[in-house]
Image (cartoon, rainbow, N blue to C red; front, side, top):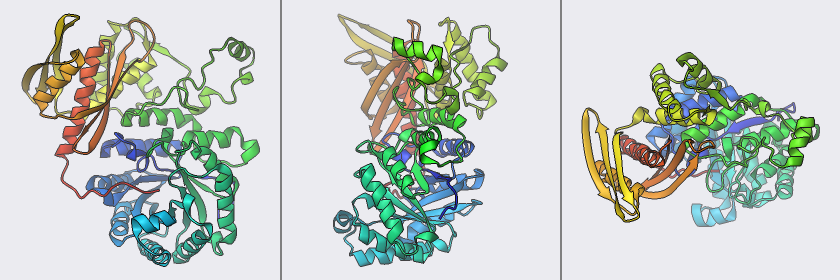
Length: 518
């Protein structure tokens, strides 16, 4: 067991977080987030599920090779091929971990595994023992622990530790538990498992009933010393326990919890923005810690109190989690150096010179259309430019004809390599017409699952940001784009999503294993 009061932060944004619909990331994006997680100070990065695809294997191996500091972990079912593949992926890491799991709840044993309790224990022991031949750092999880008989779990965990597991994870896989029950479960296991002192107990909580963070904190009070979580709480279904909420609970209420982490809190907001940008999953405005309203005060009595004494209504400072407190930053007379400096301050410190130049050109164009430029405008510009790195088609021209008594028509010109292709279509509205024209040109007929439009900032000249989610052939992608013209933003967002689908089409064929786990 851990001999101090430090909580190990295990981040699974790149594995469980990526399982959110539309949140698939490419290798370059995963590496960028992994580097930022290292800056944030997480102890363990679960970089992926190597057996699930060749892309996941390569991503885990690249992160294990290039990212320094955290332990690099891969997930593996309790099968030989999974563990061997995972061992190969994390081998380059200075600190590598294999995280293997098998279901233990009665419903999973009967309906999914069709195995006896004794067979599960045997498989768990063999899996851990095999994993130990690749690395001394082996984590074992009882999938669906939240619905598993506690005494049976004692048997499984005891066997896993005997086989060499150094971390035991107790996941509430379907978000079923209450904080009181889950805390009692951790205390019971630690008291009944005879070799509990030889392993660190961990928890991995899902948010189906909105209890993921509360369950995690309750487990910590009951002796868990590792907590598994994701940035912005993303993950399957309703998501995972939110890293930023757990960390700031421990920091703000250290008088109550008396635990610490290695997290550099000032990097939280930057990390949140990066994950939101990369996945296309917006952070809700009233999200704790990193939402746009987290440090906003509208009620008059609140504003009066904050002006007199900040701590009357704020239990933490925005700067503590990396909010700069600055809004309007640049104007039409700002130079490239000032522009690049501000981008670095906003967390874009890995952009290439070419990306900065393209973003600066977009910034200057925007200055001609908007009087005031805000940080949110810069985020929108850079995010769109970064998306273009792997694009097949670029938008050359779009024109619309629409009105109350006019059939909506859109004409679209796309550039592919050195060629220009053009088509036109009609639709229920100008946006629908443009989407159909893009479909005809690209031959990508994807289902539109989501379309949303919002103003990036206030004012009549605000950028409009459009988010679309497309699904085609079982693949789901999410993309965004912004423009002062919402029709143009719509076409750009749709085209960005189409380019992502094309990139998936062009990826080498690979055996795909469903990404399921804790």
